[in-house]
Image 1 (cartoon, rainbow, N blue to C red):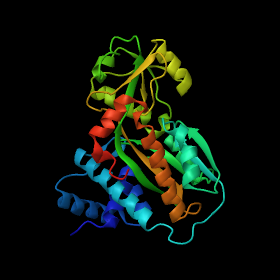
Image 2: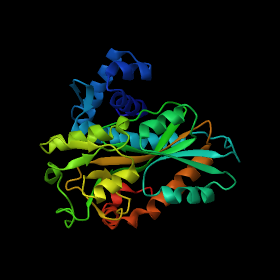
Image 3: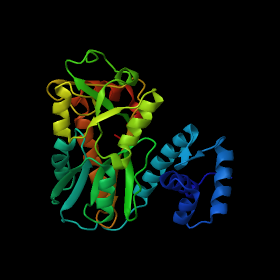
Length: 318
């Protein structure tokens, strides 16, 4: 037996739904048939892809690797065999959503060049789950979304996606006067006694990912504050807490941004769009524009710029 596209979609459906039953319903298969197919795939790759937990199916370390690569393959296939007809909505405005990354300042300008004749509006959300919902409801045409490793934000047809950055680390921001501020990187275990500003967009897995990483490091994070990005930066600058940040953000005055040792928090960046709003050419132009906007801001944070150049394997498409 050889792996085919159907098997890749099956594995991703199981990861996204956390259930063989729900994945089988999505794929139009019976549960026994899906279970048998999973066993055959696991025999082929040489190990178990999922384990059962109280919350449902969870990927094994091998499963997480297979799922990550399957998503990249499927995203490229969907982009290749997407809408092959004339672009729909030519000349119409494009409603774009984005998570709060450092490249948002350059997005509109880059897309104005990439999509000439189409006015681009931008909606920034703290949560990729909110962006996925807005896409599904037709309130957005496309979105730049960050997905935490180990967590999924399902996308419903006619929404398709393509991976922009398959893997990048989440950094930590501290007060410039913090005892750890002078280090090149900060160990998560050294933050066990710190008060935390909770990450925004907890419905997309960011809060669960923080808790999981801290528990793996042997402690429970003390989540003392909930605040939007601007207010959170002020809290950190005042020495009242620490918080996770997108690595492309330059340090706010009075703060430093540092990598976390061992990369305990990892995400991927995807571009998602509605195929009934953007055709093949415009979707490709959107992707290129967002890629240019992202790479133009890589060096806004020197620590991330150094990481980016040291890991060319994570941006082969850029």
